[in-house]
Length: 135
Image (tube, one colour):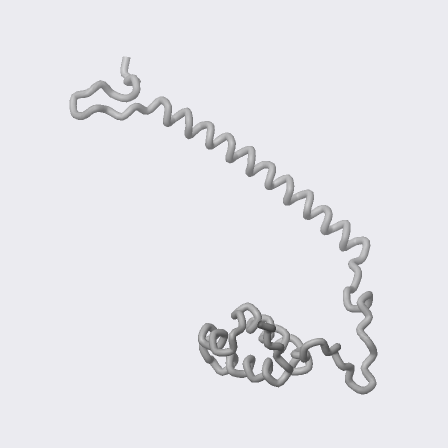
């Protein structure tokens, strides 16, 4: 059985129902579509309006006078100073992680040693678990 393909109007109607507070689980059952897909549609709608909810197989239409998106211009490149600062921060965080790993190993070993020395007593009047410090 082929899957139903939803057009822009159907997607927009579903998103508007979600935004109106309708139960997403019930809406997904009614439309026979996953909740994940409904949330994807909502995200596209919130990010780009109704135009972002294109129909199946349709390319995004450009508005009159709108130039095609330039991928290089969409992502500004960081400067040399910003890259150096980010690398320094990475080194600092890696050093902190290494120190935390060493601390964790130390405390785990110390806890094991304390646990080995402590023997539970068998009740009142039993021999103490550790030797007395009194001489």
